[in-house]
Image (cartoon, rainbow, N blue to C red; front, top):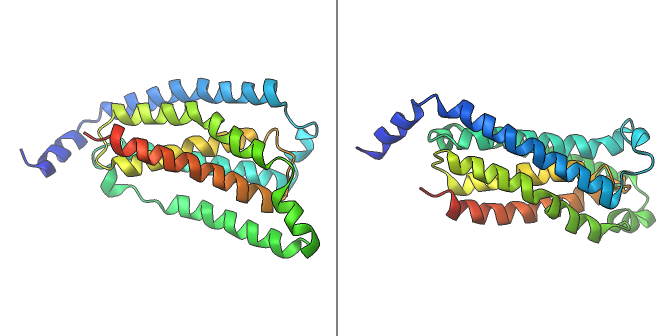
Length: 211
């Protein structure tokens, strides 16, 4: 059987998709719950959380990272299918990145020159860079497991979106604790933490998800 014929035959199997979605939900719900509880009991939610949730500049980081997680998860489910490598498009991820970049530029322009360095470095840079990857471990592992149950023909890309999804959700959860409200801080350091997790996940996916 030729490779194209095999891919078409696997694509015709419609039973696996619901199975993968069920497995994903059963894995992601407890993974996310554990991450929320870890932030709550170890770091604590920020004291003014309710106010932050209705403040546009603060809620923007939860929206950006949450949308990143959702968009990447959707792509991961697509890439778990053998035809996913041909039909999955990464433009939703690019749209999130463009929105984050636009927010960063706006914050740079609107922040006084003498305050930019402090707004960028903040006071919790190290905590951010350590915590987001740690919170990402279970969500990323869950996504890689689900992808492993599928039949991806794009293992590196699948690992890439798994890393983005897991670290995006982790960053959104970490934001419940973080009080650094400037986009100069959270676009920069959340972004670096997400990129680090994604790089590792891409390398793992390239090996672990190969047929």
